[in-house]
Length: 105
Image (cartoon, rainbow, N blue to C red; front, side, top):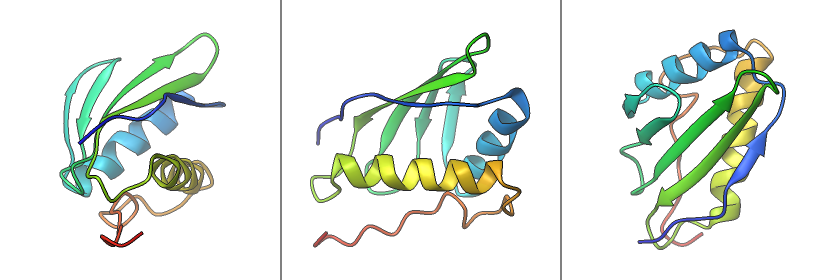
């Protein structure tokens, strides 16, 4: 298992942070800390650290561990997609942050 390069997500406010944390928790993630947050998705070996700059409204996400079969680019793509869904009023339930990465991606 190995990590991935960090990536930033812009236009993050406190309400969106609450939605993201709620969605991750509903999907079974274990979250410790409070900015930065240590997140174990409990899916596909994915663990990450997220830090939010309240002044610039930018979140920096660093995947610190993952299963060998999950490409870093796919994690980034899926995280941004789901954060945007939450931003645009998507339903915050267990499926929002449930990832389906087949072992042959």
